Length: 510
Ligand code: MSP
Image 1 (spheres, rainbow, N blue to C red):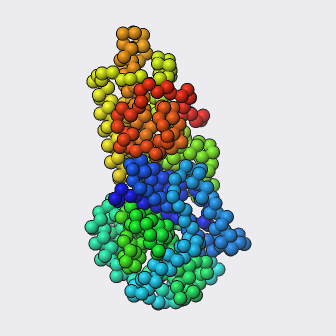
Image 2: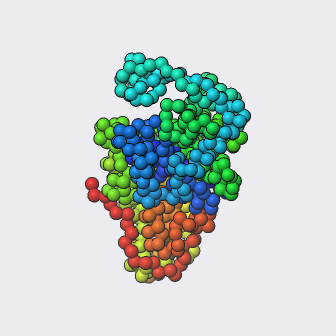
Image 3: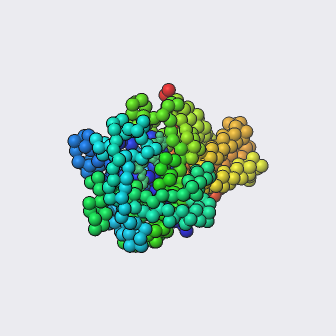
């Protein structure tokens, strides 16, 4: 990263509609993208859909439509997450787009030309009704793990990628880039997998039609993971190159779920190395959500629909809960009760009340106009240095993608400000006309601390932050503010009359 930041989400399969798992990665990527923009970095944030392959072809067949019709229908549900969850992605890629065909075929050609892709024969257990290959390990009692019908040994011609050749280059890359795979525990997992030896990887199928054809041999369709991973370079203009590619590639971080880490941390860098393209700088694997203690599944009927969450609780509340509840990288449990509890106690009580009661006192004692601060006392200086410490703690946490820590740190400032209100007791100062200047100083400091809290919360709860920003009389959009300049103490302008608005973060009725 050189003042630039390229972040991606996985591209989502269109054989199903979005659930909390999709929303989670997208929201995390958005918070990080917003934070980096506020640091003044040039950001590119890509998300999209994975539209080819067996799963999509089969789902379409079941519904009696073409895979393209299915993709066109379902893609809108994923694109709709952008406005619904307040996401600021710069582009949305669909693997069925012509630009992506060109990119995948160009990458494939490179490795074909240098001998890393060769034509061979794929052998596996084939389930004819399901049109799927399975390995020995995947079979259940010697039968198809999906439909439990008998399978037969079958061979077909297939292109292979010389993954075995990349064992050493990959291990070297992991060693030279200790932060390539995060969190640390996952890194060890991948390193031992690669150290255990790598088999060449089958890269094409003749038994599948819905996908990108192998260049000059269209009877073969390219393996869906090769196709899907390549979206990350298509999105910045591969193979043509140009300013977007030069500015943003290699990507800073691919956010992925733990189940798809291996594809990103092993296959993807190997494909790129082979084609002479720089591997990404980082991959971060997050954990999985259970729902009320149970695995999320259609058959249990407990799938969390992000649209329903937004309708019921609002995007800010849902975003806040996802990133505050569970350390990014660990598994966690979703429950409505936990969400409501966090929102009411942390957003409505702690944060909302700080803003509300401060604005209330400002109206009462100063007619709503921000007073000038006078000489600082010990408690004031302590609040100022607390704010500085919190800004630094948030920055360190965001660097490590520790969203829960960044939020916890910001809430330390909310709490410090609430405590400062209690110990400075403006209501007592207000009774003594001789202490009017002190009253002004205290109110100024509370407002200023609140302003910095709002600034730090903007990547997480963008809509509420904007409202509070305006309520504090700050100009423009909070997400256009720069943390460096706007985060410095004393940014609030004295003499400004604040708009009369009730801005409390509303409590959710249980
Ligand atoms: N299309 C591939 C990704 C290709 S990226 C080049 C894919 N798509 S997916 O739609 O099935 O899954 C997308 C993401 O959802 C994965 O990162 C997966 O980890 C995540 N999740 C699916 N269920 C989840 C939970 N219950 N909790 C959190 N994330 C989960 O895989």
